[in-house]
Length: 242
Image (cartoon, rainbow, N blue to C red):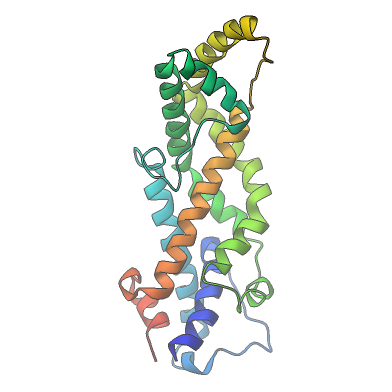
């Protein structure tokens, strides 16, 4: 029974749940799995939405805390790859401290921006339908998160960029980047290397969204597999073994 209900219900829950509001109706020809016949459609829908709410909420809470990105290898925002020669050049010259301070500021910006991610994620998911959900029923254990990522990333980038911009200003990322650029450009006078100036706003936006989806995927897997992760009565009822 468990193998049947988990793919059908868990995948549905993760698509619908962030939407969290509005009336939702199943298609006329849609039938609940036999194992859920003891539940009403309203209970199943509520369980699906609560599950993703729990997963998204937990993810945002974890990512937005101090060191949520900085001390988590899965989320850590590293020096921008396109400017890695800047990092290597400065470290070779013994200028490690400015580099370290800059990297910390990148992660602090991602952590701060994450605090305001949940409403944006909710808004991004409102257009998803039962047809979308049915398309991922046979997917893997992160099928719902993968679908959400494909469908919403571009929209999230557009909505999230102003949030990241505010966070960059709040934690003074540019005040740590400017000395790096200044020192590097001085060295390029000797080395002849090209100057580099990555788009930090875009980079932090992408890394923040990537990190949030990483955590949401972990939450999806957890709720599918671990009864202890079902923290409300409706979650326990919907995902209980029949």
